[in-house]
Image 1 (cartoon, rainbow, N blue to C red):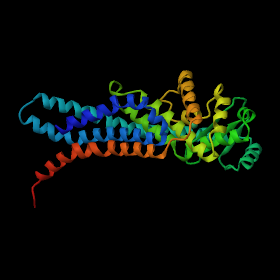
Image 2 (image 1 turned 45 degrees about the vertical axis):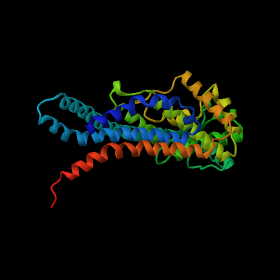
Image 3 (image 1 turned 90 degrees about the vertical axis):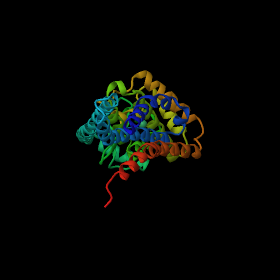
Image 4 (image 1 turned 90 degrees about the horizontal axis):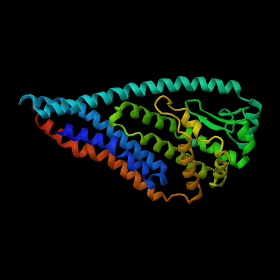
Length: 321
Ligand SMILES: [Zn+2]
């Protein structure tokens, strides 16, 4: 019955755990570690499904030796669902990566074409930023975002340059650079792929929104560290708040087919939480260490407790040479 237990574990991790985890205040206080915890939850769900695919056939044949029992039917259903999730995950991951690469290449070509090269060079020089990445667009909409990929870009519009002073601009660009450096796009895309792979009745929609918020908070923390304080980023967020959130662009560049852009209410709630975090003192490091330890437990304990006895039993039945 190991396959049943693993199927149940996968169900709990993908359907039950996301809601309390998305609500947890301690998760928002430790964003980087909490993203690791979310990744551990998703990885444990996927590993559970893979383990069901590997273990269930043997248990089904054992159950069928006594005739077509309820246990055999139940195991067959668990195997079918697990196989569906694993197959859809592989297809979804390949599809997301191919579409994202193509969309970003087009977006990057357009940015390079529309860039005001003189102003980009002057701004990069003023901010001691990487000129190869920085692009200035002559648009009135106040907007700053990062375009991820192997050749990333950090984009800022005329509208944003008019609103922000040098320190605020430096903080906003540091926030976008943090998204690019930590490859938050890959994190978000893998969550989007998993979200789409799980059949709708077994899926919890809160995970993606929660991870988005944590990635924004993690980029805020990085910008705070890089700029020596939260003041400039906080005031920039307040200035841009009524127009466009500086973080939205980086996330909107992720797989939009799997995930709609957050609506105005969600953006307002996200901005309020980010402003509250930036007004508070940085979180103590030991709390992040605790959350990482929890992530390690989520990832390691289920295989040890559930799969190790099955593996030991299977090995003991192998004919010795
Ligand atoms: Zn952001």
